[in-house]
Amino acid sequence: MGLLLNWRHIFRKEFRGFFVSPIAYIVICVFLVVSGWFFFSTFFIFNQAEMRDFFQLLPMILVFIIPAITMRQFSEEINIGSYELLTTMPVTFHDVIFGKFMASLCFVAIMLLPTVIYAVFISFLGELDWGPVAGGYIGAIFLGASFISIGLFASALSRNQIIAFIIGMAICFFLTIIDKMLFFLPESLLGIFQYIGADYHFRNISKGIIDSRDLIYFITVCLISLYSTHLVLEQRR
Amino acid sequence: MIRIENLTKYYGDFCAVNSINLDIKRGEVLGLLGPNGAGKTTTLRILTCYMPPTSGTIRVGEYNIHDNPLEIKNMIGYLPESAPLYHDMLVYDYLGFVADIRGIRDNGKEERIKELAVTCGLKEVMHKPIGELSKGYKQRVGLAHAMMGDPEILILDEPTSGLDPNQIIEIREIIKRIGRERTVILSTHILSEVEATCDRVVILHRGRIVADDRTEALRASAGDRRNIRLSLQGARVEDVSKTLSGVEGIYSVSAGESEDGVTRFTLTCDSKRDVRPEIYRVIKSRDWIILEFYQETRTLESVFRELTGEG
Image (cartoon, rainbow over all chains, first blue to last red; front, side, top):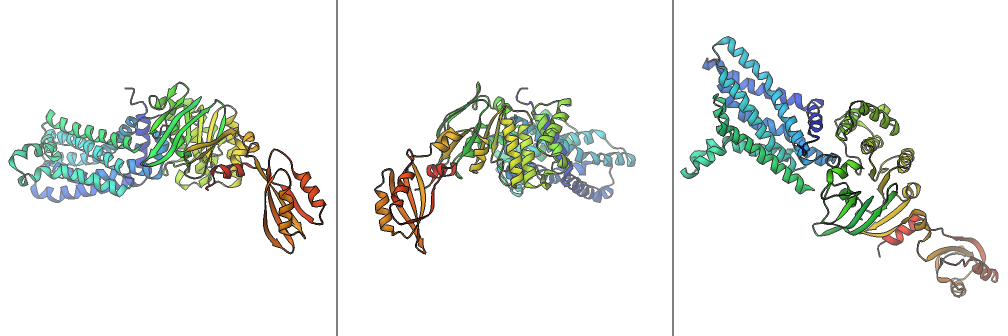
């Protein structure tokens, strides 16, 4: 693809960038502590060998964690001016956006990786059904990708990282809770709002049913957000 | 090589660049001068495809900035003002990243980074984070960034701002060396820099080109007036004014402050003829005592002030 020549270099730089600063380690620790605590604090009470609770919690945790990962991606570059150096090198916006997106996605995958131990641990305690677990992780990657795209879009909007974080979090939060707010809405809009809700689609996948409608939803969110990011950057010129 | 055609850029209602036309030849070292806000940085940013112009275009070789930004970016090495680099990257990693993007592969990469570390004097700081470097070193890393792809055109926006005098001389040497084979455009408001490094000067003022000439020619051609300074003892101001105004070639005589019977005068004269012998003859015929008598040499500075001064 002619438009994506240099994204690998940007990807590599961004991905390394996470681990050069302490941010990555802090974010991963916070994520593991929070998700581990909430999951295991009730796990033994329910006394069931499954990870449903973990995947139920996951969207809400990602709502806060992912905008924190993506907030600096464009804001910091615009703020310190390195954005000018980057975009006057022979790269396209596609390279920049896709490189940063993939770097963040890989980071999220690495962040989720240690939680696989939970599944292994549970499989020793009882009969674990691996289908929903696999579905849960696939769903988590798709959900993560959507939130990352939204976070990148928020980051391109402002040169202030805090503002980028809050905007990104607000949008992700809205998408996660909207299908729980349905009782406020007129009946004719129910279907639409349920479809908009990210959590609804994530729940479907994490049951172990991988339906193309749910995947299409996440891919659509990614494409719309990344395209909006492109428009914002184009506008910024 | 570079052809700027009717370039105009508006920021809202503010016109930063007002239909500029400029031709830059291969191998030229061009100095872009102008007061703050004259449109230097804007012009350079449009040339480097960082922002689009409101109207007009720039051609670089056979490409133009609207249709072939990628090809143009490939030909240009650009150092933005105050070298805004990634703070948390190591110098070595950063230069490696730039080399990757510039398409310098495997063996050549290591070599090129070493070469630039020597040229730009970065050897001691290669494994330090950029954020910890002094301003001068950051500027050098920026220069190495710009030179990485061995570009045909090097664009430097205030390359020596914030450097100490030794570093300034070093960077000028580098620019001169590159300027022998490559096209270099540098913007600055330090006039001596232009005199030291550039073949050609373009002065911008309020988004327009007010002068465009070879550096020496511009210095020589500076207007049709020149000033002569004179300090006289024992002379009355009215007498001097009356007598000297009568001399052909002197347009005006203005008296400065008097102190202990010494008065300073500034004579504005025609620059085409030398009126000094005539002035001397006139003074000799009186009993005034000359304490000071010299002709101001026109520097680029006076040209610059004449062209861009307010009012």
